[in-house]
Length: 100
Image 1 (cartoon, rainbow, N blue to C red):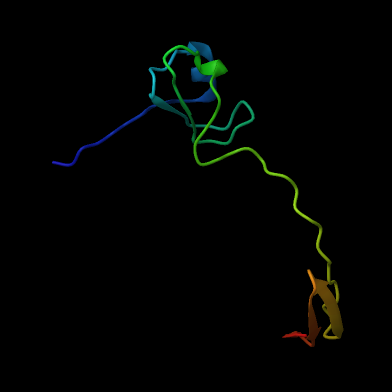
Image 2 (spheres, rainbow, N blue to C red):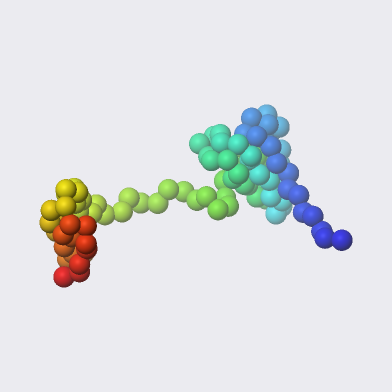
């Protein structure tokens, strides 16, 4: 017989209202979007901190820094468009891209 592991779960409103202290290492899942977090985020208890004071964790982390701006090519009429991506040039003619 397979073993099934099921974690505590609830909506943002349910967790906020109950505000439990999760056991050390206990994982609990917020099933909906709320509190500035997407659905299916989790918190892991430390045995002393209430839910509302625990940090969110899991697969969705904080937003990273904004990356560099690229060059935009906006020539879709079949003509020639050229751009430079970090020192690597490319030319597109009639929809066929060629590296230079």
